[in-house]
Image 1 (tube, rainbow, N blue to C red):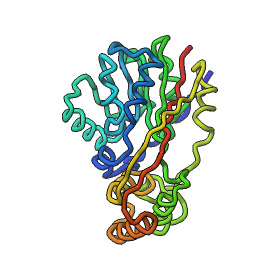
Image 2: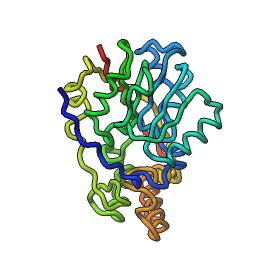
Image 3: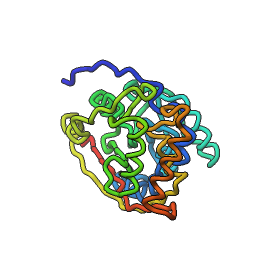
Amino acid sequence: MTQLKTLPTYDPSLFEGAAEGYAQYRTKYPPVVFDKLAEIFNLNGQGRLLDLGTGPGLISIPLRTRFEEVVAIDPDPEMIAEAKRQAAAVGANNITWLQQGAELIDSSLGIFKLATIGRAFHWMERELVLERLDELLTDDGGLALLNTGDSPWESNLPWKQAAVGVVKKWLGEERRTGQRGQGTRKPVDPPHEVVIANSAFARQEVYEVPFEKSWTVDSYLGYLYTTAFSLKIFYGDNAPAFERDLKEALLAVEPSGHFTEELKATILVAWKH
């Protein structure tokens, strides 16, 4: 029997002020990712989707066409407000938006064919979320963790390393997370695969989807300001100086100011049976 853990205390500053930029500058999941999910789960416009840690709707909005109904959840009120704006802009009217933690999901939400989490599972009480998801998914359903694989911290690209160097110059060597820049990131331990293997989910598999992503100096700055390690509020009055340093460092690596990278989106799928 899974031991019930204490719910984590949500840090409302985790993405403070980042919602609008998140929708604009974060790497979008390429359509082939959603095509792959449709293939894996035989999605046909029926059934329901549960999107946890939805942010501004980067999964729930484009994936809504594969389902009859979508429930999208996030604890951040700014993210939910931005998601509603994004949904209205494209006429997405089959999504219910809920501001709450993923750990609070229960049977009142109904039953779902698929649950998705994009770049957010590490912020959650993972064991508890998996336990509760197991009760909400159909027998032929499952969970899909999506990631675009564009983190600069794991990249060998010189321009990304230069960008991380500028962040460290202004914020220190330790990677910041939460508490308005005073918190530090802890490693994800154990990995998601281990947590899933120890859950009620019967099997799992990882799929990779290659795609190309292009940036400019301005769009990469916009991206950095949406990350938990480099929110604009962290820099305060130093933001203009940070921006000058970043632009100088990026242009020193690539004078054109245009950057392209080959990425691999990953889909970690866990099935109930």
